[in-house]
Image 1 (spheres, rainbow, N blue to C red):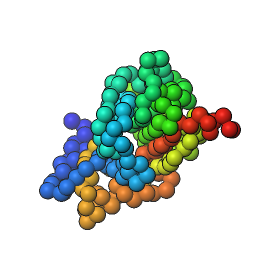
Image 2: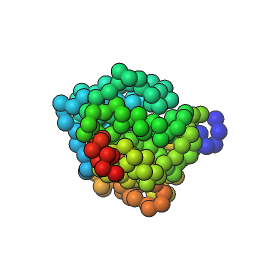
Image 3: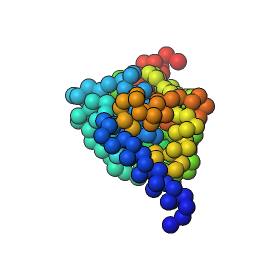
Image 4: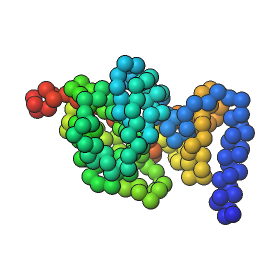
Length: 215
């Protein structure tokens, strides 16, 4: 076992020891991002929602109940097929960076499959190390906004992250759950937005064909 692996295992052990008994919710890498999205948007239980690439968890966090997951290779987001359409919303959580093709086309396809007034939610990553073989893209908040506004109204976009969180993720703590209490230091680290070191980015858009025609 390498020194890096040993250090990572020790870091995870100490993290879990320090958070034992605390009420925890979201992983470190997504904590602040999910919290920020919840400030701006909460779903309707009656909506029929399409989840791409195992994004059901974020859908459940947002209050959706009628979720259908399309556990497809991320490249399929480039074209989901003519029968896939008229959804109330689509949720694509940390998938866009893995699309083996044109991400602009993937964004266009996301808007195509929702009905008029439907919601498109994409989350991705910006300042982050390569984390798998098919890790092709990085997106700033402004990039996601630019891609989405070509197809509808951008409701909100943003990003979260900081240098300390980047370090903790690099030693293997990215999936560790963060205590909800602000008394725990991991909660403070997860919530601190360090400006340029944005790790988690997102955009929420609404399909609005009348808006596009007016441009």
